Length: 420
Image 1 (cartoon, helix red, strand yellow):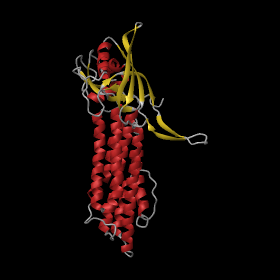
Image 2: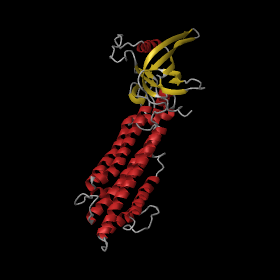
Image 3: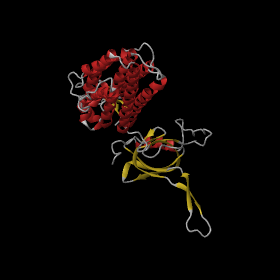
Image 4: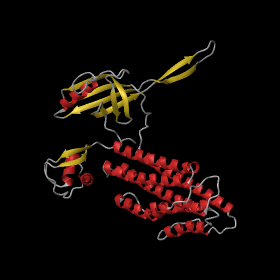
């Protein structure tokens, strides 16, 4: 099933439990309006009642009794000191947050529960719980999926690039109207030189149109160049190397981040050639920033498929891209008036938000990161097999711990590892 590999850890009031099955039901309040001598009725939907969630949990193992007692106390609405949870004044006493394995967090009340022991199934017990939704929860299937959120990163970046091309195109248009007989050599050089410099060593098809007569086509050429840089890498096998390489490639645009116009460009006035050069620099920088964010998005997509980094490492990637977006937003605001800059900065801010929410979705979908003690000395493959029953996760342990001697791990050593 589509959610088979993305199930969340089921828990209630912070107590994690193994879930066998769930049954989720909801019905609506329907009011029928009938009329004399008229067959049928008008049916009005007055809204949905609280969801009913039936959960089947199981506890097993030599120590199942202690885990069962802790869970039963949570269901009974007792705190760690075995006292009843005080009322909040809003009818939420004894309720708590349920982490549904499919639909995520929702605040619920415990309607009933039943604990079953079976003589033929020793060292285990099953618990049937009936929860009732207490507050408005997320719509079914509204949980953020990392791959879907990563697509938003690209879409917002495309909007920002298009907006930058459109705004600088209008600047060039006004410049040509104000100086119809001028050669505008300074502006032409500032637009042609990046194309010549950045296409060295790569294969990309450009429009070939005159950059002054068709400034928006020039903007599309810049986008084509940076997208070509991104497409060079496969973003699957050598992720870390690809990430470092694309950042090095984009350093070619660093010179444009230092370009400052003598004054801010206003929408209602004719720009100078110096201001037109600043507009050109902004378009190049925006495309560079969007490409870096897209690269970070591709890293997130790969992380969603195969976990290779710790939450701290994921956060570091996102912070690099967000810092670049922040700097670009500042340059856009210094170059254009607020009316013009907002068309560029808003998609950039949305791209930064999409990048952050994608990373959060990836981190939250993973098991908790805990500290595990090595019981038997050996190499990481043996320890990965002992922890998870899968020796292939040795590389994951190495990434989480950065061990200097991964083949000589001693008993008693503490390693960072996922809980499952």
